[in-house]
Length: 307
Image 1 (tube, one colour):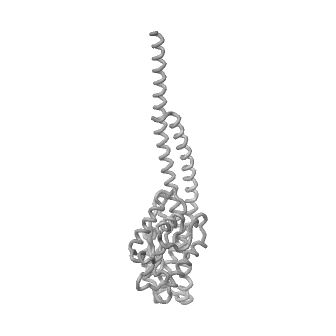
Image 2: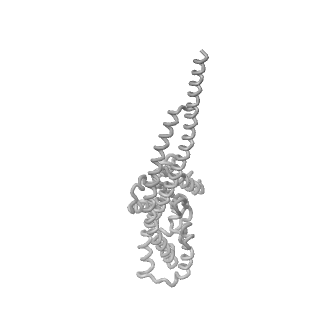
Image 3: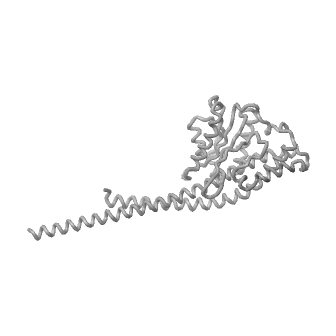
């Protein structure tokens, strides 16, 4: 049985850990509020921009722009995987890595040929795939220390340049979509070529964006663009891609802070439970020690009387 000093040391250690997890929970909660404000202000524009692009594609031939042209065969592919730079966020990183690997499993022949590439935004994803021998594109570790639009632009540039020069025939992006404080949606979204119909995430479907898309399709012929639709499409497509990656980074950041807040709250609660059990164990050990001392004193007194 551990002695009283060992139990006291464990109690002090867990109490210190609990203070750290409580502080991390408060920090994550503050970051989450800011992240929620950013993503809630970003989503409407990103959704509407996608609807406008869909409307433009209805009026034009898909061959009008190289980013809309589908390749006959996918001989090479790029996965953009968005994770966090840090851990202590529960299963946040593990879940998105698992989702990405499941999506990659459908392209086993492409990977065996050495043509499956990974662009990982976030240290956890980059380290995971680099250790397993995937062909890495770029280095975007530490991007969530300070999220900037420039980061989204660099990611899009690498993806688009590789697509246009034939380094890959398809680009998919895998990320956590922020649903609420305690839950995220794992999304595998087609990025290039830009799909014929606007891709709907679970949040978009829940908000009825699919109905808005249907209305857009029905009224596409009544839309008037000035200047002509082709010029507008060529101007909007780069902005659309940049803004979609920017939205994805914000989605992942908000989801990460929510996951970390929940994980630290659970850790704090678990520490409290450990403390209760250890205090009970300490009191029992202390009571046992006192009882033993009393028995020894009484036994000694009886021995003296008998002598």
